[in-house]
Length: 284
Image 1 (cartoon, helix red, strand yellow):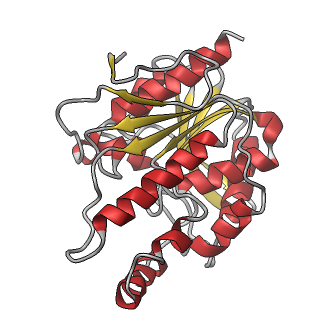
Image 2 (image 1 turned 90 degrees about the vertical axis):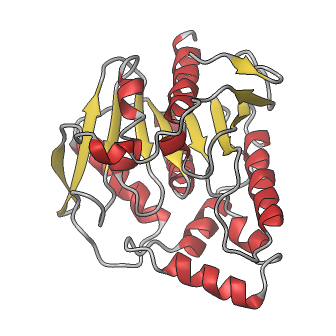
């Protein structure tokens, strides 16, 4: 486990607070591409095949959902650490990695539907701790709303907030907003950001009363030259702070040495946050 710095890591049950855990000194981004993939299986879900791989033992089972176009390989540096203390599963959404492609566009609703059936057909019972990066945060929040009895904890890693796109549009020029739109629409998964955000917004502002950690990036993302980087980064952090504050048991951690790619640069902080959630649940 790391040694906390700053205000320290709050004890279990402490309401919304900010901690700044010490992170890995050397970035490890890119190492995932040189590691072998975990053993897994293809499972038929609503007529198409989805790939899932599990490791470790003990409950609750940790289910990991990646950002847009990332797939299971995003967790290559994280999954082995979690497998040391709990069962953990990674998977490829439709159109990614080893899973079959499906007609597009798709939304978080289809992702949730697929994931629930995948876990059922693969014989992976709950309860679950859901760990998600970026856009995956929208997916797991919707999952937790629809299958509340199955979800006992969450870790949101630099997650997308449902109000993010509306907020960023206020500080971008029309030309920058158009470029931003093209970037969003170009994802091979065909995920509809706007509709997915609308679906999550519809479940209401309160987050579940379960152990929850939001991990925010500590370094700015590489925005294009001339863009209002400071304003965009402030929006992102304010929205993540909002998410943590809306959960009765929510906490905000900061990955001080990472930009958005926290699983690549500081995988240990994701492992530590997940272990914090799992240990809290096991004590109850």
